[in-house]
Length: 518
Ligand code: BES
Ligand code: MN
Ligand code: ZN
Image (cartoon, rainbow, N blue to C red; front, side, top):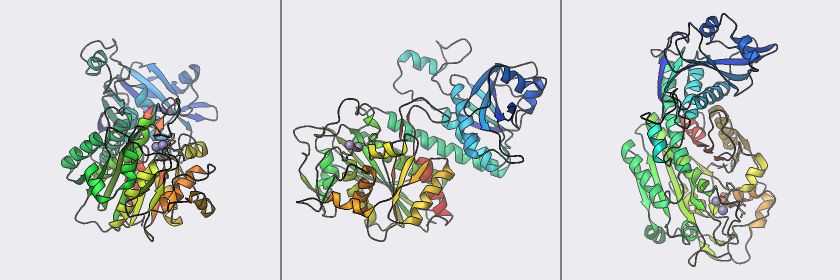
């Protein structure tokens, strides 16, 4: 990840490859936003006019690069659009700053050092600029060829101006922020942890399924647990069989890569509350015997995004030293068709004893989550939240940038939705209409894994609800849309794995620590 520093240098005097200034959409064209004054002066006060001549409007995410004039020590001036200017005397929303910083950082990939002269005055705005820049300066480079890797190290083969597209900006300097100001320093430190953990989740999601399977995922958790002092327990296929985890085993049995259930826990001494986080960790979803058609399986390495988010959030809670017990449950399996795979029509006996008739082996997420939810509830947490790329239906309902929030408790659903908003993640409350439950009735078992097609995301939520202990507040985040960005990058969001839900979970742990979530 990029190195982050705060600096009180002026935008004009900072020696760097680039200096980023903000430009907003004013009623009469682009306007330079606070932070960019000294750069504007070097342009003779005509930066906005120059930008307008170049066709810039200040629209959100718009990037304009200019050679630095005399009086600006950086090589390049990058003007990034923030969208509409806030009402008079108002300040920019953190999310607008986060997105602008991210878009600028992305546009500076391949450069070494950039100053961000955006309006960062209070803790919240410093946090947003730091987080946006660090999240925007992300690239998944593990699978690049040797030549590209050499470029990445900046040794040879790079372009003359030092810009190697695809190599993240190395050094982020947030200007206007004071390294000695307690609030600014705390904001930067939190942003570093949160961005690193979002990027950890992105890396896991982007890792192809031939390298990330249940065993290697579990090993990654074990090594992070060691580094950060977390409890970790991995149930392998033998332990799962002994424990009666019929859902996880039933989904994993078609694969040469056997399933795992990982419990990873952060246990600070001063904690008053316990949160259980449960993640769907299908390292590849082929659909199983109910095989997905071509065109629907190319991105299915992303089907462990929920488990990646849970893992990253537990590590983040530990690194931030939050006073809450956080237990992550990662239900890891690879859903493959084979001679040993679960057949449509088979009945599984789940952890806890309920029986499930598997009418569609592609509805596998709810099966692994059912075991993990039942197990998580046994420890009597104050609340449980599951995160899953669960249904295509949720994507159809909410699109590619918004996750659905369902719950067995209206107040908790509202809390989670508002927490996501605070964290800068788009979500929307969805209902669990009781009349859809009868579609899940099975003629031979306690329940079937397939219900009505209409409202498929809600049907999946109703299935999960059956496996949550009575009286435990539970929320279900269906991140099928936002987990994996199949279109172009935007703001601080890259193509591919996005790290969806990590920031929401971290914020939820923080709110739980301060007593205003549960
Ligand atoms: N992993 C998929 C859901 C999904 C689809 C995630 C697209 C991300 C992008 C899930 O396991 C699945 O296949 N769900 C089925 C359920 C159906 C068979 C009841 C679906 O949504 O079609
Ligand atoms: Mn599936
Ligand atoms: Zn799936």
